[in-house]
Length: 140
Image 1 (tube, helix red, strand yellow):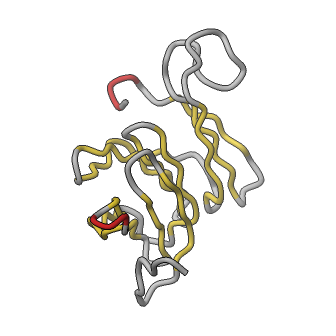
Image 2: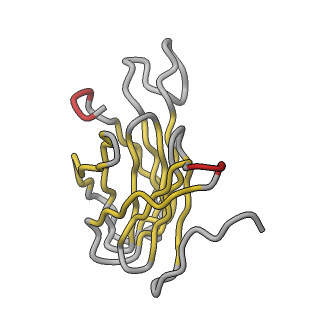
Image 3: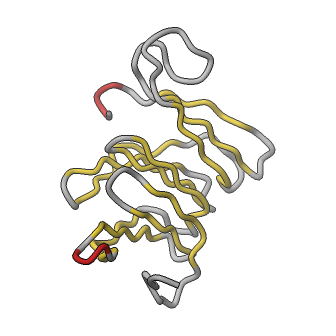
């Protein structure tokens, strides 16, 4: 064991890493994040919350973080420094959102990433569906 990042009352239900941070979702609907501090130890840098129920999955790409939750919603968060702003809430699932995957733009025609330079996000839900979302340019 190298480090314990967080001991809290709510269960940790999701994890993802980005190029600058580690994010954890929890059963109270919150997302905590850490960045590398001194002596190569991760330092808690904050928490953000929009979901009313448990965060069940997370994904990250560039300056964006995506959280899917038991409330059937996906929040799109834009990172600016150490603050995170919810720039969009996606609805469309009729069950809890259990998994998220992001395809980076490929720069050309490609099956995964958007050929127009936009991110493509895939979401899976207990409603037995997989949905495909494109992140509008103004949110990237």
